[in-house]
Every structure is written in structure tokens, then in C-alpha cells.
Image (cartoon, rainbow, N blue to C red; front, side):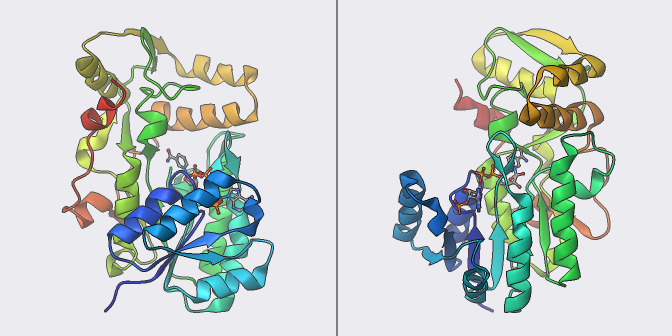
Length: 312
Ligand SMILES: NC(=O)c1ccc[n+]([C@@H]2O[C@H](COP(=O)([O-])OP(=O)(O)OC[C@H]3O[C@@H](n4cnc5c(N)ncnc54)[C@H](OP(=O)(O)O)[C@@H]3O)[C@@H](O)[C@H]2O)c1
């Protein structure tokens, strides 16, 4: 059986561009949605043109033109959506309902991977306001996919290292702190940090794999399951410098929400669930679910000591 043809929707995005690259690298005929709505965004257009140079096909379609979306998805076997879902950038998770409608009408798509790539929303029924909006909206999309009987894979990618490891899990910065590091509670809750290119590699591995159909695939490679303290220790060793540790109790951390804008409040809620509750690791991967590094042991995933070297 040949490799599936893949359409990436949201291909110029932070994770989307890596998924386009991984799809090409793994030999899939790769299509990228080109939205006329991008207007004068020269950077996006240049990125799309660079995908074309690397062998991808650009397909013009718009979320405001249902017919164009149907025609786009008819040309492929697999659709991967990486539409935005981070509040301080932009947040368009429920726009995927239009894509679900188009996939249902087209009727040919063998697998749909919606924009997930984070905490498993199915486990977040009791998440805090206002951050729960991310999980609630992702669940709305899941229900629409399942009602339309579209075969799916949900990729639960845990913490993107660029947002959570490079800054040693500090909020409001992407760089490692120089003197003091804020530690959530005792800093001993287990978290999973993932290099974004590895997320893309694993994601593409799942699409033609019968073991992952209609399942959630967690990216939880064993050496990347680390506590915040372990992450800080890795950095201190690389940098050759000890940081002052400032421990923040949960209630004090949650109280910081009061001074924050909406996007910041969403972030505090997510950090609370990850670093205090341990929502990424406080469950076993069970029936109807898979773990990516077990399925694909051939992937040499990036460890955080390697990842962090780029910040030295
Ligand atoms: N686990 C983590 O740590 C983590 C971190 C960040 C994100 N995520 C998740 O990853 C997913 C993707 O997030 P991201 O940060 O990669 O997204 P992003 O870069 O902010 O945006 C991705 C793409 O969304 C599309 N888009 C934005 N506004 C749109 C609109 N109005 N109409 C149609 N398309 C629009 C654009 O696609 P075009 O290319 O077509 O312009 C954009 O390139 C989300 O589900 C998010 O929750 C997880």
C-alpha cells in the first residue's frame, strides 16, 4: 500500500510548519492549505513558497468557502489540522467544525488529526476557568468528528519544549532565567517535554498506522519525563551555574491570575494543571490509547540536555 497523501491545514503555524517538513521527510505526497485570507502577510506567503520548493503542493481554500474546503480535502487521504490554539497568539479551535463538515461531505478522508498537540482534553473535565476553554473547545471538535464517523487520531503532545523547557517553565519569557528560578511547589511533579520536530515526526508516523486509528496517541518518551527540578538541574549543569530557587505554593500561584489579562489567566490555569496537579503523567496509558515511543522505537527523540544546549 502506498503512503497516504496528506493535507496540512494551518501549515505555516508553529507546529504546522514542522508537520509539513516531517510529512515531506517521511515521503508523503504533501499538500498545504493556502488561504487567500492571508492578504499581505509576506512571511506566510514566503513560507508557503518554500514548502513548494521542497516538494509540497499548495491548495487554495478558505474557511469562509465551504466548497473550496471540500475540494481541498477530496484530493488527499489524511488531513492534519494545526490551527491556532494558544491565547497569546490566536485561538481558532472551533473553526475546525467547518473542516469537519467539509471532510464529512467529501467522504474520502481515511484519517483526520485535529489540532490537539497538548494536554489530553478528555481528562480535563474539571479544569479551571478560564483556561478550560482550550479543552472544552477541543472536545466540541472531537464530538463533531466522532458524530460524523470520521476516522481520527488524537495526538497528545504534552509540553512543547520551546514554551516549557527553554525557559525552565517560567511564565512570560521564553529564555532561561539568569539568577532566580521560580519552582512550582516542591518541583517534583512529573512533566513531559517534547522537541517540536519530534512531535511532528511522531505525528506523521501515526497517520498510516492501523494501531493508531480512532485512538489517542500520547507522546511520552521515557527520558523526557522530568520534574521541573530535574529540568533546572540539567540547565545548571550545562550553564555551569546554580540558580536561586524560589518556591511558589499553589494558592499563591493561582492568586497571580488576578493581575493578568485573559491570555495570562488561561496560561496560569494550564501551568497549574501541569506543574501542581501533574495532569500529563498522573494516569496510565490504557485501552484505546497508545504511547508513541513504544510504537516507534526507531525515532531517536531529543533529550532535554541536547535541546537546552541551544540556549547557552
Ligand atoms: N503542548 C503545547 O505546549 C502547545 C503549545 C502551543 C500550541 N499547542 C497546540 O498546538 C496547536 C497549534 O498551535 P500553534 O501555536 O502551532 O498555532 P499558531 O502557530 O498560532 O497558528 C497555526 C495556524 O493557524 C491558522 N490560523 C490562525 N488564524 C486563523 C484564522 N483566523 N483562520 C484560519 N486559520 C487560522 C494559521 O494557518 P495558515 O498557515 O493557514 O495561515 C496559522 O499558521 C493548537 O491546538 C495548540 O493548542 C500546544
